[in-house]
Amino acid sequence: METGSRQAPQASPAWVVADRLHSAAIHLLRRLRVEDKAIGLSGPRASALSVIVFRGPMTMGALAEAEQVRPPTVTRLVDGLERRGLVRRISGAADGRVQLVEATAAGRRLLQKGRARRVARLARSIDRFAGADQQLLARAADLMEAAAQSERTSAR
Image 1 (cartoon, one colour):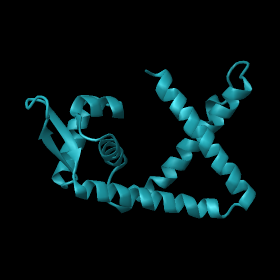
Image 2 (cartoon, one colour):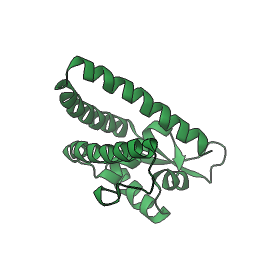
Image 3 (cartoon, rainbow, N blue to C red):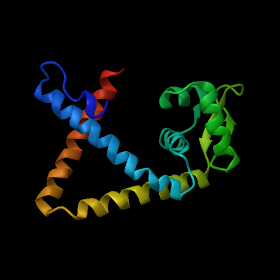
């Protein structure tokens, strides 16, 4: 939903702000994603690795759900990450028949390196703003985090 669908019938002020934030976030993330290529990961692999690192060991089904893709797609992603030594499959503690995927130390290091590169790139952009605007962005980040938390709790 880019420029062609910006106006909704009788859009509320909240809708207009949400539409602008949505568009800005997508464009910003696309530009920051070039840093993932610098560490040798495609966007989908970086995303899957991020979920595995931050959520901990999980089933392939849970990863597919988190990434909003079908199980065969997750299998291909995990296979590629496993070949690079970034994740491994393990047996579940409660039920040895259940297979989980977890990040290796190398996977966690690579993900942190990629995140550091993306954050550094964004920080360089933010440094160009005056102090008051940087404070405004910090407040906006607080509000966006609160909105994300609200979405997580309402989705349950």
